[in-house]
Length: 73
Image (tube, rainbow, N blue to C red):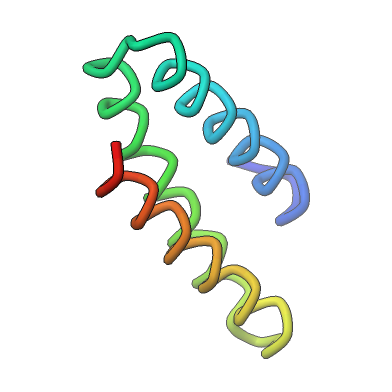
């Protein structure tokens, strides 16, 4: 699906930005709908980066951040 983990991370950033943009623009249903693929992508990236502890911890922190952001939304 993605050529590299870095390209998956770049796509994840796009999802995250669109989700946040929807939230800021008060398009809450779309923002909440985009929360699901954004979180799923973050979890997938964390799983793929589990061999490097530094990358994994960073990715796990991103998963926690997006989860908290979704609860806040």
